[in-house]
Image (cartoon, rainbow, N blue to C red; front, side, top):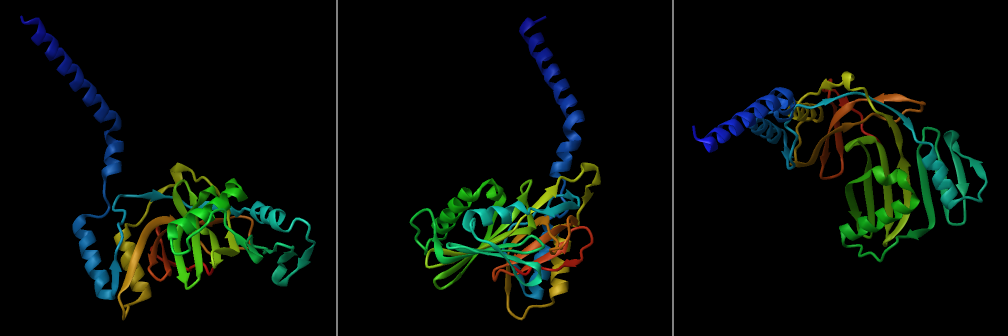
Amino acid sequence: MNLSRAKTLLICAFLGLNLLLCYHLFGGEIRKLTRVAVSAAELRQTVRQLEDYGYLLETKVDRAVRKSAFLTVAPLWEVGEKLREEFTAAAAPESGPSGAIFYDGDEAKVKLYPAGLARVEFNSGQALPDEVSFSNDQELTSAFELFLQELGPAFSEARLDYLERYGEEAVLHYVQLFEDMPLYSGYLTAFLENNRLQALEIYWLVPDKPLQEKEMEVIPVTEALLKMAEYLGPSTQPRRIIKAELGFYSCEYDAEKWEVPPVWRFLFEDGESCFINAFTGNLEREISN
């Protein structure tokens, strides 16, 4: 018998056995990753239905089968205290309306609200770390994010959502991330004018990691898109949907802890968001920020 041929047969048999074992061990997980909830044909049909309502889907969507769970969250009170120490350390507290506490310093005013929202208003505007070309969005956001880094590590979870411009004014909208998913209930908004930071509003949360066994499949993105069109009704002018993502959202609560459901969130080009509960398909109210 040809020894070289026998070795080749043995090697092939060994590789075949390894492939068979890998399939049995990991095949289920691989199938889960590649399983889709929405076929290409279903997506095309949904796009046509949306267009009939006056909505244009101009972003990629997640067609895979997705699972999620409720998040338990609590306000991160340390954020407001950090801002107070940073900008109004020597100021005495003053009582404001609705239980708010104000600190009036030489550099800025800090307002802390009972539910956890913190607002900083800079008396003369805050210079950003680098020279900035206001007409360049990338330079503007990079300079602001350097400023955030100087404030501390809590804001490493911030991701730019979108930017609005009004002449010499700009508003940067950030969302909080949790395990690479947007937690829309946590947000940071920066108000700039003439290349200087005028004010900050921050509402940051501490999420508890949910138990894997509590995860459930969410409704497909196509179903959520049609629910959105149904709730909003037909649009007389074409409206562009520029983001469609799975994340977490609830309105703000004056509570120590509460649960936040997963949502499909659709962002329009004008900055309006629509949140569809990813378990029930119900419309969730938008944050006013």
